Amino acid sequence: MLTFYSQLHHLHHASELKDGKVSPCFEMPHRADTVLARVREVGLGPLATAPAQDSSRYARVHSARYVRFLETAWQEWSALGHQHDALPLVWPVRDLRSDIEPEHIDGKLGFYAMDAGVAITAGTWQAVRASADLALAGMQHLLDGQHSAFALCRPPGHHAAAEYMGGYCYLNNAAIAAQFCLDQGGKRVTVLDVDFHHGNGSQSIFYARADVQFVSLHGDPRRSYPYFSGHRDETGHGAGLGFNHNYPLPHGTDWTAYAEALAHACQQIRAFQPDVLVVSLGVDTFVDDPISHFRLRSEDYFPMGAAIAGLGLPTLFVMEGGYMVDEIGINAVNVLQGFAGQG
Image (cartoon, rainbow, N blue to C red; front, side, top):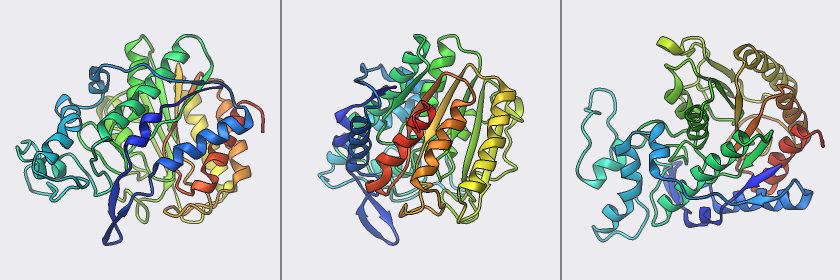
């Protein structure tokens, strides 16, 4: 399996507001480095870089003004004399206006954010666009006739919606790749999200559409981030009604229960008959992950990959979460090896 990777992810190493204090993000450069080391260790396959894309590719799923904000936010922030990370100050909740973009950077940071886990640093834009470009290159690899690819994206993307960032995510890599497939002539794409946290951004982007099916297995939002998205009754809207499938699972879910939900999810995917499958590959379902609450073990990721392979679809794996850095490489690559029949 070809792995797409970029060193530019090192340019983004941010802080977050969590548990009442500002500290370095759990989403750190070492995550991708650890996965890459494992890819090399097991001989998964060759590595490839990705060509830089025009930002209009990102604007196929994000608004043009949001992409522009990401591109210019650090310049606006640092122009005020700030050299520390830019974090949101105020959010347009409930009955506050959310249609008019503020002119001041403090207002923009809150306008385009869902939480305080998406600091902007001097290198954020370069890192996030390189991450999206990996997903685009991976999809092009499938469109060229290959059966699978792995986009080792960092930062991740599935919490980013059309006009907001959140959960360490800025551009929605999986959604950008799915849309690119459709733009190149694909008719139907499924996004399967196996990250512990619900991919609210991916769901939001495709919620009213019938050409992209979104299927997610995740922690019950009544107890788990992002809290306000991912309930079972969220099944789509308008033309998208019936094409959104959520499997919220309780704290402590082990492989036996997870595998049952995954099997049902695969039935939904087979019924949809997509041309291509995009897998949002989060391995924060691991028992020792510091910010998640499932109980999967490293050996469980082999049958997860095998189950996905059983769909028989051209498949792009896009790296999302996973924060136990000692095991993240083993677990992510176990999925890929299971998919390839090597587990």
